[in-house]
Image 1 (tube, rainbow, N blue to C red):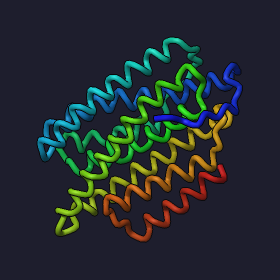
Image 2 (image 1 turned 30 degrees about the horizontal axis):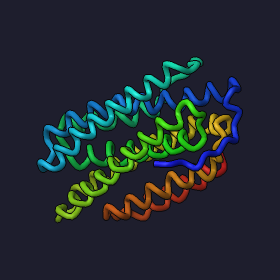
Image 3 (image 1 turned 120 degrees about the vertical axis):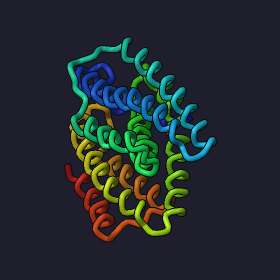
Image 4 (image 1 turned 180 degrees about the vertical axis):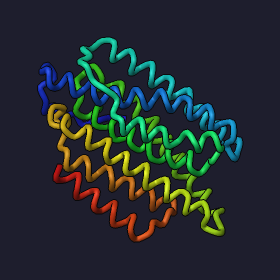
Length: 239
């Protein structure tokens, strides 16, 4: 996948290097969690096709982690931390994995977390320095397929949900996951300028893409949730 390069940041500045590593740290953490998700989910996938996809995804996530670890080893690494919101987002998946709840696992992992990964990878590829540019072009191509798989699987689940029980459960989890996602991007917002990103445009795109995936999967949200999403877009634009 090719990016339109946008060199609008000082790649040699301390501010850029600090912000770059902050963003990369979130992605590294996500990739390491994704490997375990895929391995566990493949054991209770509803079809051989889904199982095989997850096993292939596991290999790809492992390759991503190796690529990113190699890239990070070649750069300065100012003191930074994984956002508590990133950790809380991933912890939402733990009960679902334990209970083998396919619908919730797909929502959290392939739908929401991988959707966040697409955004973070795309921005790194467009605005990042030459050291990481080609790496993210490779990673993003895979992440797009992972999310598309999540949308297809969630759609299948919802189509078989004749009494609406699964839909209600998914909506409850989606609220929690979306909240942590929004707060994660709030944590990352102060570094956007140092990376050369236009934060308001990025934030609006993140949520609009999420809304498009929701619609594509056939997950009809209650009025409250639709209002919350629109309000979140406005919130991001002004922070």
